[in-house]
Length: 200
Image (cartoon, rainbow, N blue to C red):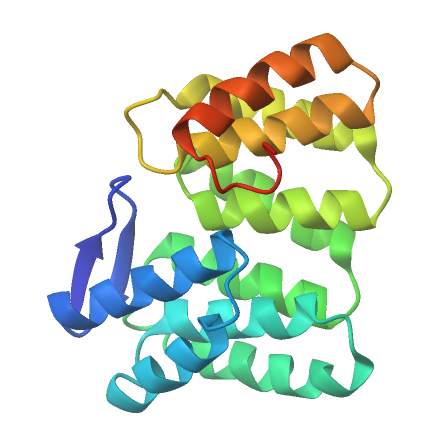
């Protein structure tokens, strides 16, 4: 297994460069609301069942379906990822712990773990994204705003995915009624990511 960095410099445990490209493609499908993320993960996990990030993303996507009948499947994905702790990075192990907390129904603990991941890895867009959506589900607009306004300082226009971060920041500001700044940041994000639904 290798540690291969994505375009933001975040390392993922995966067998080789080609399969890393497949993992990053599945993550991007989630980021851009495409319907093929799970099928991409199924294909990747057939080729590389020792990719902890793929199991974590599978678990996250199953939890985002918000269906009680899928929680056991998400738990199985979490256990598969946990079994790979000997080869995964500390950041990946933290994702596994966050998924485990979420599966167990403790979303506040999961939020704290995602906060910790982002403290050490501010460009981990997956952690930022799942934290953002769960803050919305919890009805925590102040946490949504504080997390995003803290995170956006680590991004610039040249960082891949920065437009998505602007879109999430736009949403966070809108949720607390700061419409002027929300519109400005959302328009900046739309210039970088014209297909991002949050910016739009």
